[in-house]
Amino acid sequence: MISIDNQVSMFGCSYAELDGMIADYIGPLEMLSMSILSDAQEELSMGHSNIARQYMNRAKYVMSLVLEQKMKGAA
Image (cartoon, rainbow, N blue to C red):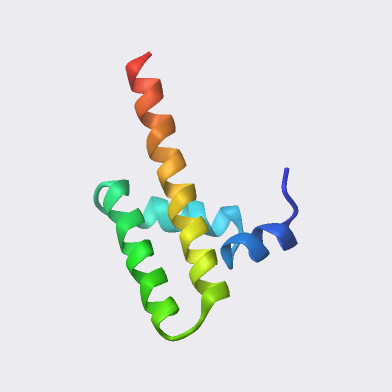
């Protein structure tokens, strides 16, 4: 398991916080990942490259869950 410090470095929050955000989201997770990527674009436009990187990692985390769900459904 990845340490909390590494999680925060990668995502700007912990896995638990990400999972909470996902649980609270109403709608398809694909839309959540698109929203997070929009936030990353905004951060890039303001010159906040590290925050943008963290947002992109959040979007990838969400998309990994989407792919996992789809793979389970196809089995």
